[in-house]
Image (cartoon, rainbow, N blue to C red; front, side, top):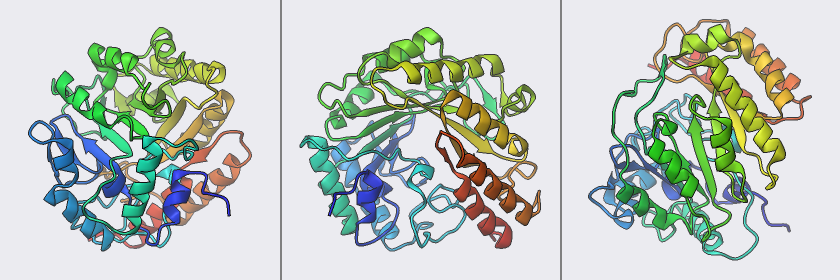
Length: 374
């Protein structure tokens, strides 16, 4: 029997199915508060006061693991709209498609290494529902910069905040490099900080050449030169580029303060960098938030992404937005929306790129519109 090819395949061989975040993920926000996911409200502690080892096996971390292993996601602090629950307080009967989840799926390493050994430990402890772990985070997810140069209609963050991770905190997290698979940075807008660009450019993965450097960005502050500096080597940065809508009027209605031309130029620059990069790896994925204002342009987005040979992810709008959240409010007939998403899935299958998220959108519709939350 062949070994599973990807981390999600290996996860699915476990005896039990539940969200893997408390066993595999460390999330550190700009204030230093630590938990297992950006969409979990529990707190393991603060990285300014505690070591990573103390945080990872804190009483709070153990409680979250116990509750999620028992299936009590709400008590564990999970947000019901997260990509795993998708609008339902109970876990799905089958895990959602790996490419619709927060974490980047990856091929399992072949050569023996500290990372390979850690992955095996994490999966064993996940399968056994262990509460005290010897494995270390596979995904290190951080918010080094809170400031943002945009004022998006669906984002409640304080955009003018100067809160950021100090050099000391950044170095503290780097102790996880050898055993992690993904270091992911998000904001705010991370590139609003010149020092962060320098940090990322100098980020050394010599001790773990298979470590993925992953950035979430709105793309407005990237230039062709900056992209080249971050991608023209053997371990290039991977970008999740947030663009909602295809038409300028739609984009500027949602992402207030950003230049449509600059962001679209960044999409084209990243597509070109991906096509010519010597590593042969994928470097960019377009993340498109589906809401009332962007619904009509989804097919056009598929066409543009296919032209550029850039993978596309459709993510549901989350939050209390009565005029925009089609997954929470009856803004459209549910059967019409389900038919639309089914047609888009069929249309996407004829393209050369990977288009994700459509099955999750349909799942959410059934949860929020056929059985509205209390």
